[in-house]
Length: 282
Image (cartoon, rainbow, N blue to C red; front, side):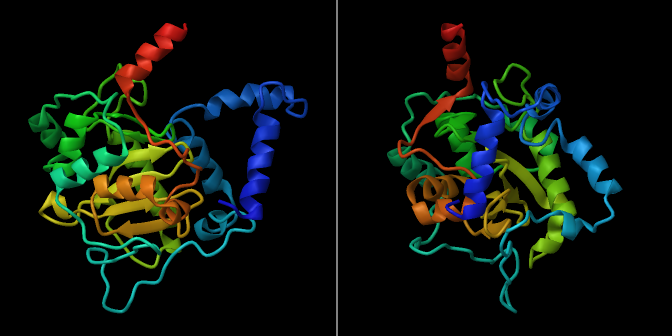
């Protein structure tokens, strides 16, 4: 994120995106609301149409000018299930679900967390699977909401009055599977797109998922479908809570796994508290 390419992109976004921009045209301003939805929900279809009409291959369409290598080559004996991409400075074995949420709570305050009281039988019926114990515990301690202002952790079931996308995991899962299908040639490993289930998304359009490749949900690794991460597709051999702990607590890990800069102060705000704050401001 400290590359010249990233800084140039950021400068352009600020120049054209500012409320008082003097270089943005009226037509561009009228077009802007199209892109105001969740990470890909509103513009997946326009992108799909544009890509289908392009004379370039999907692989050629994917990289931006100046992008470097986007994937890591697995060793000859590695599989997605046992793949290990542990960035420099990050070591240690994964801990179990409840312990990993306890460890996360030492870093991320639970002050604005809310027990979602999820009907897990309903969630399991929708997705035809159980969920990892750390995610179940996270929904009890924190619930769905915003991590450090940049990462949305999603509900497992649809809920229309949430401040974010009310589809639960559905829409971002569809987006992640579509992203994989479009750009899988960038990865040096293969996965069944049907095994991809999203649990979170960043404001930089990175989608964080599970690979549901094991009968035991506590053994599901995290798949990163990144926008400006390096590589774009990554598999991490630990669960969602430990992934967040490393993402929030290790700068080197951040550089490889998220396309936006996280603030130094770690925070969490449940979607209900977000709604309350907006009501107060109004």
